[in-house]
Length: 210
Image (cartoon, rainbow, N blue to C red; front, side, top):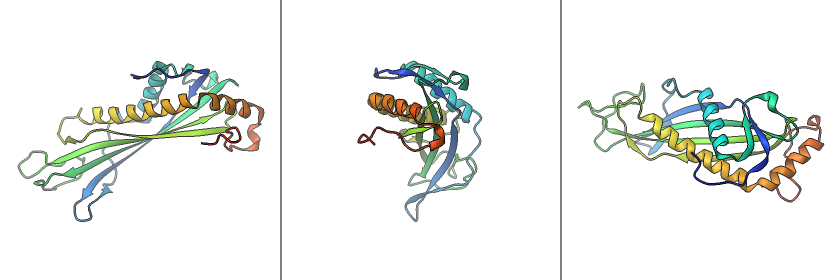
């Protein structure tokens, strides 16, 4: 849940379907850098619909706007349209004594059958903000990182890591939106006056570009 009270924007927000991408990395000990492991393991609960639901719940509870909806029909001239994109990146590294046997599911074990690897999660979040006409206003970005944990076979271990990193990124984006309260209202007014046919250029008021 939100940890701070933000300055509420005097408009409603409509959350449009977001995009979710995933990338798993393992540490290349010889080159001392992480590299992608290929197609990530499929996890049922980690899907775009779940991300959309979490964003809707978070922004609703934060009361950052006068109201938040996922229905396109709720869009009016005094509405901000939010489009989230999330990239969930998992990083796995071996311990000093670890012996890598397989990368298949990201759960890697040593010859004794116990985990010899650690992992942490980074969530890159980008929330684009548009006027009701579809004219772009700006995009807020943030990255949240979990702590590092020993890899286990527990199916529920990854969830808390993703949740922590994602919530940190959401909170930071909410802080940015709240700080730009006045600028967003001026930009929204400008987007209502400028027809969408003129393009989707940034419409921050002159001299206030981020």
